[in-house]
Length: 155
Image (cartoon, rainbow, N blue to C red; front, side):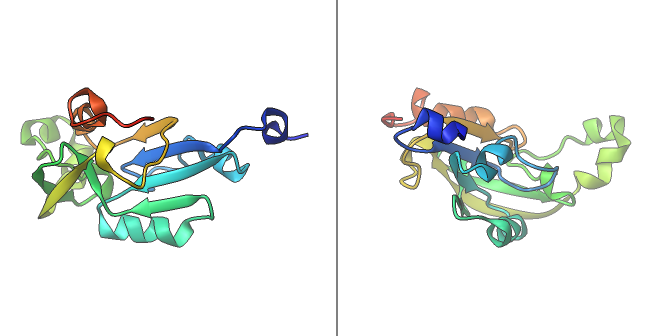
């Protein structure tokens, strides 16, 4: 008997992945996804990373091009290494301390993006597990999830 058959949940676990860029191996929920125990709603504003997620996605995955944040318009600093991309500009003094990251954190392009508040994204019906990796922008997302944004969602 599988865990799903034993537990008989009313619905699958809802995973929200903010900054779903597949840069460093499998996401922490991969085994749940492979076992059919969850649905994933992922967000990735970088075009190439989003294209790769869409190419790989399975039936329980949905990926959207939104940048999640405080609802304002911000400059996305697209870096040489896509995993270093952030709404925050890399600090040159820090790059000098970590020479391996100097090239990776080099900004190659800047794009103005409107962010969406977490609690205002209609595609998120439920949120049981949050995976977030957005290079320093996490606090803005947490505040927009009901603790500092507009009205809280029922999840």
